[in-house]
Length: 154
Image (cartoon, rainbow, N blue to C red; front, side):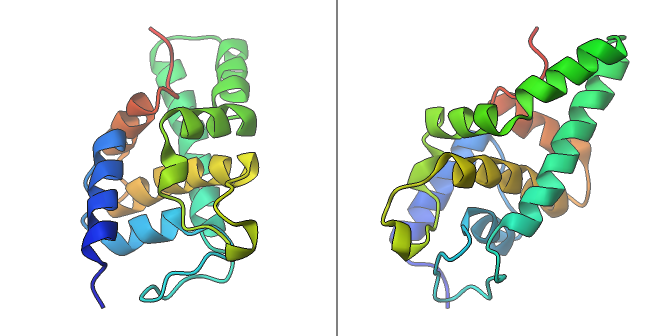
């Protein structure tokens, strides 16, 4: 069953925010599917987007490390940047600033309230989904990280 026109419009808006268009829309829907959330036509994982969030967390940390290495940053600078930029409080704040909460398929028991933890894992899941959708290409991931302002400051 294809997504409703309203959902398709929302997906287009989200893709504009992150600066990436998914080839496999199912990955995007999985990234937006919080644990306990419900989406009729999606063969959802039991824990929602948590598996993709685990991938996204690793990819974000790897990207920050590689970019720091290439910029000749010290190990301490790289570690501090990862601790700051990839922290759950920062990821949640970024998600809310970019209004990503408007796209999360939430657990009905939570109403439309998106917790900071769910928002942080949603941001990570989006990064993981981009990595997988792009056939493990780090370049589009870097673009999304930049669009979300999670990369190294200039």
